[in-house]
Each structure stands twice: as C-alpha cells, then as structure tokens.
Image 1 (cartoon, helix red, strand yellow):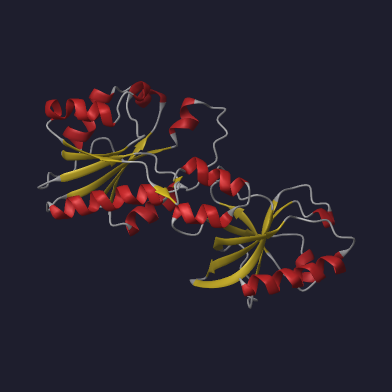
Image 2 (cartoon, helix red, strand yellow; image 1 turned 45 degrees about the vertical axis):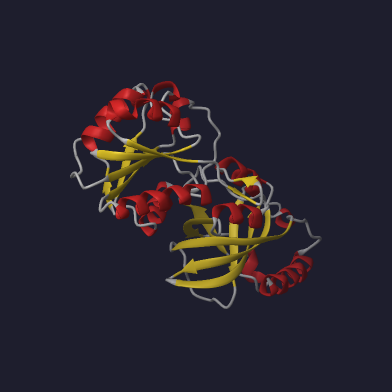
Length: 306
C-alpha cells in the first residue's frame, strides 16, 4: 500500500481506478464491506483500489468543542487498510479551508485529476464537499457529467442491528465489549507506553503495567475490570486490566493498568497493545489490600476460564 499525503502527487492511471471516501472510524464490518468491494472490483478490472480519508477527524476541525471519542487512531487505520490490501491510501489534511471545497471541485480536482478515478464506491450515508452536498444521490445524478461509474453500499446489519461507529461507541461506554467486538469484527484495542505506577500491585503479588495511551482522543471502555490479551515484545499473553480510579487506595487520577499472566519482564517505556475480550466487573472499594488481593484471585480464575 502506498500512502499519499502531498496535494501535488498524482497517482498513475490504471485500467480501472476504484476509489472510496470516508473517515472510517473504527473500520467496522460495514466499512470492511466497502474495503472488500473496492479491492475486489479493482482486481476484477485489472485496476487499483484507492481509499480517501481525512485526518484530523472533520468534527474536531468544524467544532473545536466537539467531545467525540475515536475508535481508531490514524496509525491503527493505516495498519488495517494495509491488511485489507488497499493499493493507495490518500490522507487529506482536513482544515476549515478544505471544508469549503464544493462537491463538484472535490470530484474534478481530487477524484478525476489527482486520482484518475474510474469508479467511486460510496456508502449509503457517506458525505463529502461543502455542506455535505456530495453523496450517493449527487454522484448518481452527475455520473455521466463526470464520466465515472458509481457503486453504492447499503446499510449493513448483524442480527437486525445496524452497524455504526456511534453504536460501537455506545457499547464501549457501557462496558459491552462483546457487543462492540461483534460489530467491529475484531477485538477492540488500545495501545500505548508502559509508565511508572505506585507499585501497589507488586506488594500484593499482582504486579501491573500502567499504560499511557498513544491517542488521547481514543475512547476507553467503561471503568471496571476486563479480561484482555496483551501484545508485548512480539508475543501475546492473557491478562486482566483495570480502568478507573482504584478506590481502595483513593487514586485521584484515572489509570489503565494490566496484570499480565505468566510474565515477569521489565517493560517500562515499552510499547504495549491491549485487546479487550470481556468485562468482569465494576470497580469496587475494598476495606484493605488483603480483601483486594482475594478479589483479584477470583478475577484471575474467571479470566482464565474465559
């Protein structure tokens, strides 16, 4: 996959360049349907697949006070796009001035001139251009003017539940990890750097790695204890993770800390990735550290069973 960030670079014309447009936050199963369709269509016509996305997320630019939490960082998106065998990823630096570009200019200057697009694949609720005037209806109406083919993707659902980034955020905010994972088509993940903690876990024989996440705007699941997979030093381990304020020791700062099973390496300042599997329980205040230790033993047994 070739990544394009410069506005001056033009991609070469192929037999049939197929492009799609969107923020793709979460890259859930609905998004994956789009990725599969553009790569399949491009390959069928001996052409190239092109994905156009925006960074930062347009909502942050258009509304400085927007409190939207992201499902995926840009780095995570790039990794998933690459795994889905996209040929070209065009990352547009979204700005106020860019938001004023009309749908017509977007098609003419970017899709046609820059990306040599023969076919545009667009989701049922995708929009582009000033005032969101560009959508599937706009493209269908003007496809002969622009000389491009249009493929539209209808709303996707699982068990009659519509797949959307909004629904996934709602599930995560309520601690419904398995429901979120079902719509994502993979385990929800976070990543970051291991930083120094207060060492309480080590005192009760449950040492933890404290995580400082890479993307501060990324959504965290509801406070509580979770069964997780931990990817560190190119290996995957089972573990349990706590998000919250550790009420037993009256911690004032929200923390993310993970106890990695069968692991004893020093990993301070290392990068670490966490996949969420299931929520075990809410945070709870215990009378003392011994009571906390008893509960952690119970949690660990449940985690291993899961």
